Length: 292
Length: 344
Image (cartoon, rainbow over all chains, first blue to last red; front, side, top):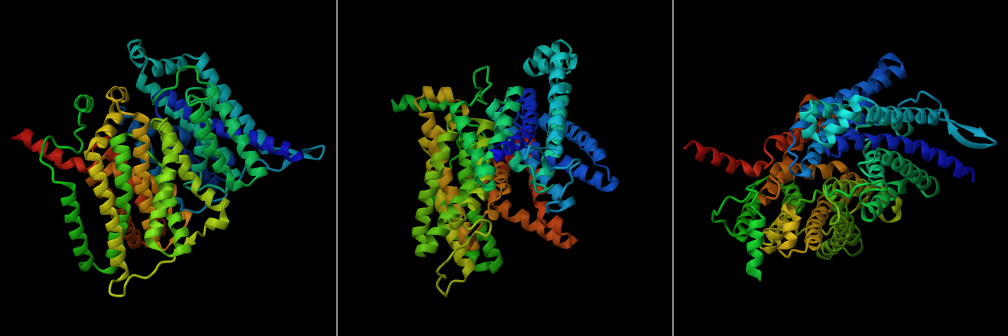
């Protein structure tokens, strides 16, 4: 029972990170109908920037802020320089270009930093508090809850309560009408990519210290987990991304805890297959499942 | 009835103009393959051993790129899991070979097992489109190291297995024998694929890719066509993986990382999606570019550059080709001839 409680909290903490990452995927999918397969590598790039800054200045928080800004900037660059010019007549094109970006980013990071895992420090202790002799949460888990919670609240407010959020939704759902009404559709698209990349960087900053450390391919498995989370919730649904993230996090935590860590990727694959074959639109799909 | 169907297909499938120049008399594939065989045999007598080994590697890559280009280019299914299918073929060959030491038998078993694996993934894939399919196959690619370490009594985790081989006859040097083996397999694979896609099956593939509703109206069974395409391409990947196991005389998960699957996609996109000649160019690039990048790395003396430069080059080329010339290398001759004609 003790173990179950510990694994549940651990799973929720992991799940929130996957939720944030899945949220980034959903943001871009809603704005541009592209699944950004380069999200993981972009996040790793931001984490490496933070790693350099923290090593140079000794301040974790400076690195943290710079990583988010770097993510924002990378998102703008990727959209303005590359994605904007992709021919969207086939859904494959966007995926293939994103895969090209993955290779470029991984190669560049490998050239600069080398292909070894570099350990990254956490700002708070990862030792769990004990309540009545049962290990539950660590300070770091609380930090993760707070960070992801803030992101979810801010994004919800942004999209439902502000004019810019309304414009972004309008640009995504009816680009032609929005353009006639004076919305800068291209600008909104860039903003969407920037926001998503920043959220992805945050997820990277949160997850990398809990694993082996930073490495050019450190986010590959995280990306697959987050993609699964996004599909479980439905690629169109931000709430779905959060719920999907929690489901994936709990699943991974239980499988790693009760069976073995090496089984975790297989559990993810099994979940993905089940959802795709059973309910391809995801648990929160309101509209009919899309073909692309 | 057949007549009506072909007519309907012909209207439903405007040739994408990527690889099929209009109504030019094409050579029979068997002739091209025979010429290729003569060329390869001649090359193996001229080239030094290391170049022969590279030639063999190109042949092994050609098997998988040819299969993948048919799946992605002609049928529109993007698979990021072909690295994993290669691993399936390679591990099957290693396990069978270490038990019975009979190469033809091992290849047959490897083909059988990858057929089964391809059918399973293909059945799931037939219900998925675009990014969903890419995501699922990506998960398959990620799972390889996890499978090898979970069942480590069979697959021996990260160390992998070594492959027992009977040495070739003494008169033939090892590398020449490897080149013959790989190219023998590659040419057979390409010939079969070429014959397959010039007939009705190829038309069905394109019809399903371009417009599923129209294809269905023309009497094509969409799910069956997609599963078949996946199985065919999986078998090619399995053969290729088995060849790599023979070439390296060992198999390990490190030989089939996610980047391998990405490289394969890059190869077929650069070569020109759906073109078997494009698959050949892709296979050549997969061998040549890393070698070039490595020599650049050695000259600068930077080890980090050595391993990673190829990734950057592949990535940049992939993005640029995708944005500037989506038809790939194979479309360049027809692009040039179109330019010349326009200027005349």
